[in-house]
Amino acid sequence: MGFDRPTVRLKPDTTYSVVVCAFIVAICASLLPAAQQPRTFELEEATIADLQHRMDIGQDTARSLAEKYLARIGALDRQGPSLHSLIEINPDALTIADGLDAERKTRGPRGPLHGIPIVIKDNMATADRMMTTAGSLALVGAKPPKDAFVVTRLRSAGAVILGKTNLSEWANFRSSHSSSGWSARGGQTRNPYALDRSPSGSSSGSAVAAAANLAAAAVGTETSGSIVSPAQANSIVGIKPTVGLLSRSGIIPVARTQDTPGPMARTVADAAALLGAMAGADPDDDATIPDKSAGNYTKFLDPNGLKGARLGIVRKRLSGNSAEADRLAEMAIAEMKARGAVIVDPTDIATLGTFDDAELDVLLYEFKSDLNKYLAWLGPASPVHSLGDVIAFNNAHRDEELPYFGQELFMMAEAMGPVTSAAYTRARVDAWGYAGTYGIDGVMAKYQLDALVALTGGPAGPIDLQKGDDRSALLPGLSGIAAVAGYPHITVPAGYIRGLPVGISFVGRAWSEPTLIKLAYAYEQATRHRHPPTFAPSANLLR
Image (cartoon, rainbow, N blue to C red; front, top):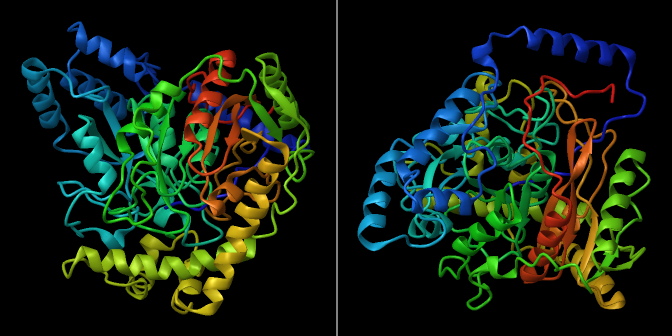
């Protein structure tokens, strides 16, 4: 559902030629016709509560909101900056909105999401006129037999699904040299804070759509970093829940032990509302557990939530990589302390980084098994029926599918044995033990912590379709260990480095979403770092 690592930081020794190129790009952009420049938007930064108020007083309807966001998509995603965050528009969106407007008049709203326009990632099945392809041409024409469970929940809550978002193809689990946000169907998603910078991935389109105000909120998926990394790269809130809080049924998989959908929004309150709407036990996903959902997660929005909280600062392996990033981290820690948090510093995790090889083995085993099950679920009408078929399709359509990078992860997965093998079991036990029992659980118990804190990652690196994401100067974060353990992780905007967003992470034990939401909300309300993107053609390297 999404495999990524934190995005790259800017190197302090940026060359003169890069600065000159950026300056030239900026001058050229200033000469674009006015029609291609981003326009003011009536609903910019509007929250879900704001949109409900507009409908309550008759200023807007579900239909008019959908129309305004669709116009915004046309102006910014298809034209102007050409963000390429949407892979497909829902042809039934306005009809659905009309029905919800009629229902509001006769019976009142269903809840906080009634009539709210959202977008979902193109690996979440919808049994409607939209496709579900994970960005791949191999699944064009496949028809899911029913909606993904979380999509059913969203529809029941009254959300209007405007469309599907672009993503790193196959949730970034095709090649280790991929460009985040690129898919054969959707092209290259662009970061709205600097159009030449990576949006990160794999939930690239969901993050960009939310950041650029193309919808009220979005839904992404994560296997390892693919909600929190693009969220922080686009200055939004991302919640990667405990594995099992949200169902994965009907979502194109990467790996059952780490996959989860999650909300992506401009505020903690909106992300919490979306989380509550999607949560619930699903008989088709045995990882979901009845009574584990807290229901309405907005009840944990406490502006004083940092007071008395014990927060462990993870420094070893996560600091010292960038003076600029470290400065933002220190500012965030100081703000939390000023708001009454008890700072335990440092609280290093001895096992951090020791489970990477075991994690990859687990993902390779599970990807082959789980993808084959999903493709069988699609039935005989699907163009492909196994991972082997997908590999063959890509080879037969190299010009469209493999123009920039290959499918070596697919090949490695295809060569793996069954998930019943001893090698798989051993890798799974090792990975989870080092991440969970001896990692997050161990350090939190030792220091009696409410959460672990670290920067989510560094500012986005440049888009490079030929070489893929620049991993030469990675600024690591907690996304990997939280993902392998299956534990919750929330990122909130923490500031900007040369105009590029950086987020702060709150990580906790399983099912600790209420605590993390309380902490994240209190930090957000105290700092309010987020500002909307300006669609700059390039990062300002002169700052």
